[in-house]
Image 1 (cartoon, one colour):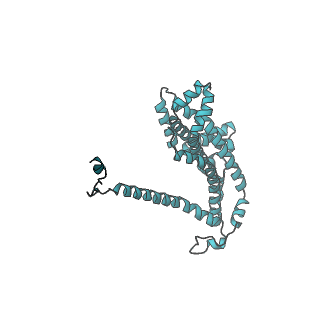
Image 2 (cartoon, one colour):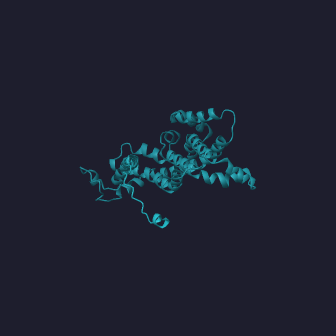
Image 3 (cartoon, helix red, strand yellow):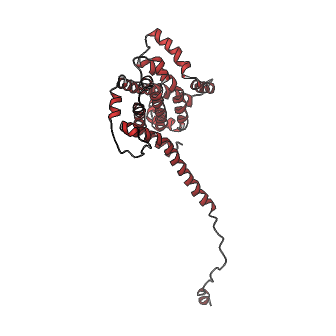
Length: 294
């Protein structure tokens, strides 16, 4: 009897299975495709002007007069760039811009990173109004800072010098550097820093060996903003200098009535250093976008 019972086969379940709702999966795929399309459109919107400037700067003068212009380079020539670089004041302005950008970056990080750490880690009276005041200083027009600084630099002998432009650009970059680094330091857990202190690190060692490596993506973002801002700033540099002008100020003053080819060459030369700097700093930004500090 028991043997017969065990040999019985179970009848298959013929009840209809409920249909799987695929709408959430389809919605997720649609949103992903829309996101990718949006990223591609934004990239094209930002890259197309750079491509057109590079194409015009590396084309011959005869090719620039053709209509319609070709989007594919067929007459490559560096004649315009060579003539532009040999123009009066261009090479000196390029050297001044590199010096101003590097010194502004170093000075902003030396002052801004410790200040951002202090804002993030220590509670002191007036911390919130202080951050609001930093934003207020960024809202001021550059002329409001440049004209009083020009008078001060004339009295102290700093007018028409690289140091004068460095001090102005540092004042412009510091608020953003402090706010960016403070937000990044807020994401670094206090427990990690306290653990380093327990294992014998001094406060400075814990900051340099533990906190700083975790905050490098945010510091890289602040560095990119500082360098690009310093490289592209033209109004303050034009007011504070006459003979020691940066490249944007020199281009603004000397190419206003220049031929169209030279204007493209000047615009292309202004874009190249910023792109090179961003290229070398991009891996730190990738770390910041690809992972979240917890």
